Image (cartoon, rainbow, N blue to C red; front, side):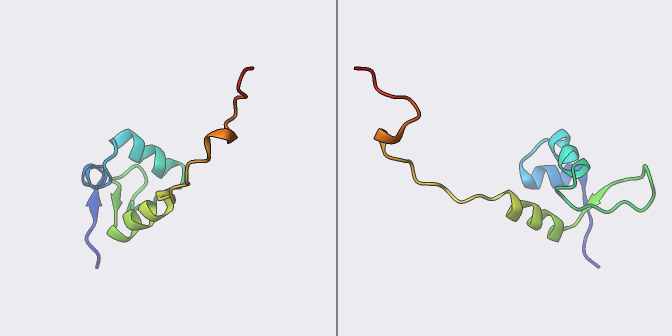
Length: 74
């Protein structure tokens, strides 16, 4: 059986606050384990890795200066 991670440990591992972790959980962005309704919430390493993978975005190259959203005056 995979080791269960507490909310506090999960937030520390992810580098986010408990409030942000709870928001992610409540919005269905991260999987969690809860044995009874209104009971303690736990996370798995696999669930944390999935969350990190979904939250990771590729860097987009900076566009050339001539393609800015503002037009030059003059």
